Image (cartoon, rainbow, N blue to C red; front, side, top):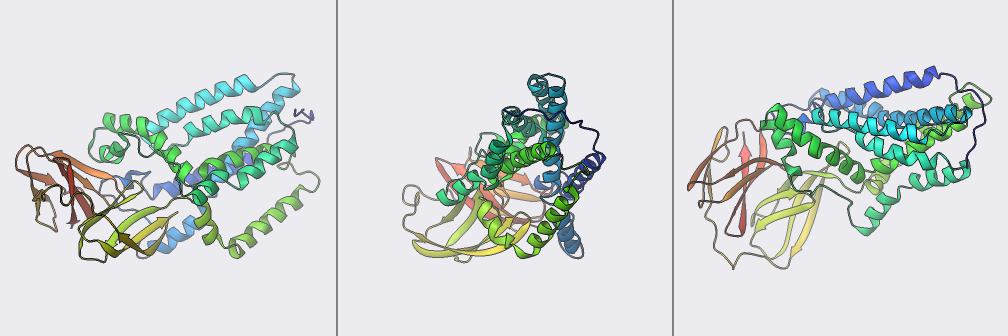
Amino acid sequence: MYRTTNRPNTRIEVADALRGIAVAGIILFHAREHFNLYWSALDLPRAGFGSWEQPVADMLGFLLSGKMYAIFALLFGLSFFIQSDNQAQRGNDFSLRFAWRMVLLFGIGLVNAAIYNGDVLTYYALFGLLMIPIGKLPNRWVWVIAALLFIQPLELWQYFSGHTLSIRGIEGMETLYPTLATGTFAESARVSLLYGPLSSFGWGLEHGRGTQTLLMFVLGMLAGRYRLFYDEGQHRRIWGGLLAVGIAGTWLVPFEAMRNLMTATAIVSTVEVEDPSILAARIEGYDLILSGEKLGDTSFTLAVNSNGRVETKMVSVHVTEVCGIEEAESLKIVASPNPVRDILTVRACVGAELTVFDLRGVAVYRDTMVESESRLNVSSLPAGIYVLSVCANDRTEYIRIIKQ
């Protein structure tokens, strides 16, 4: 059981400054994506990609990405220690009061999530509750927990087992970004509130942020226990050593290999099929969907976006079975014009369900055929490649659409 040392916890101005820098950095980094509106079907350019903006974006990513949130989480743990230790010095148990504050933080996070679906305050509040029992442990056991979190056991398990911890398959979650593009403010707030925190938490699970965030909470608490933010003893030398290790690690450690190991998932942004017998290809969740009739070997190229870095990978597959070709005839779909600028005319059977996916597998348009011909207004979609899914009679076919 940890016991307070009864040393005064005076205000730490450098911690206040760092917290402000971290919040400003997080806002600046996400502003270039229009706070997740870029991922909707709205015609918003993503700042920092292409031409002269790319070097600026690369530098912004180097300075801010993965660092500002870590500082913010570290200081969360420091604040927990200061508040808890101050109450312990008065003979009070801070557990219930801190739990109530996490309930309030969760509520604030829900309000924020209704406006910005990338909110993290909700799962900060949940992880914060874990600090109550951790904060009662002596330092040696807290270091054990920190070491366990440091090796990121969930991510290692995902990497070596081939399984992915994901909650993206929850029914209705695919409506999040299309609603932002076409819905009213009330509708957008509703889906953001329902699926925004889940989407954010799921992204954290997939990219290691879950264990990393809790690790930074724990390290912040330990920094408070060791009074590292006070100018005492050898603390300046300790911080100088950490700075030197960080700078050296930036240039010497093979972070690309480590990222591939510790990040269990990546976003496949485009699929280019080399084999003409493959009629269409798209990403739906974590599945690559190919539409074609060829058995045997084929290949395709994936553009993989991993933490903002895009790499092209050639993938070869061997097709041993084709499902649904002999059981039913073609749906005889016609989609024109293709390429399209404004109106896409689709001819298919009455009752067919139409869905347009972007190459991240996000549904950006849905409709149901009430006649044998339907006109889809795709003028608001950004230029690029999309996949039209037509589902009827227990059968689904796909057509690649080029939006100009």
